[in-house]
Image (tube, rainbow, N blue to C red; front, top):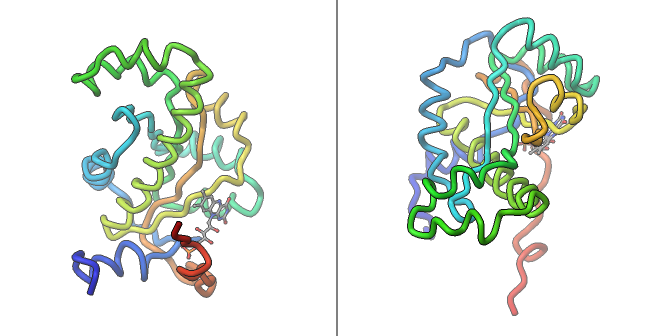
Length: 196
Ligand SMILES: Cc1cc2nc3c(=O)[nH]c(=O)nc-3n(C[C@H](O)[C@H](O)[C@H](O)COP(=O)(O)O)c2cc1C
């Protein structure tokens, strides 16, 4: 009663959405990824810094290189998913700030001249955007399989550069047979929420 979002949408995005471990062969199109991005780009970040970068791993050769960098248990799903995305944080996001935060263009120099400050801001805000991205994948009627079991330095060297920090790899597609274990319990409201 307290939620205004249509109950079917609540189920699609949260209650019935699962982290898929297997996928059908149905391709994930460029149009679908574009629609997902054009939705989730509106999720908030500090100073609107928008540091998430998405690398779609589409070629078989690139997929092979990525699979080799995944933890053993993650390799079969990364090899089989219709689409795999590397999500990373752009540590040089401040270059876009004058355009992205036009009512305070001084933010770039006032707050983000130091690389260390940028790295921690980019990690937090790109991780937030990664969460929006997972929900966006669900909004497209697809399942996401986010993974952090991987060789991060290897992924940075093979697919990114020193200005980008890999955050996670996400398998994307329609869930296949036996796509998940039984749903694990979640913490109850009383265990999580305190009021002061
Ligand atoms: C940031 C992140 C990293 C994860 N890394 C892995 C991973 O390396 N391998 C794996 O099999 N599952 C991984 N998972 C999947 C989680 O175990 C799964 O999302 C969680 O248990 C909830 O499952 P459910 O959505 O089916 O309820 C990861 C999930 C997230 C969000």
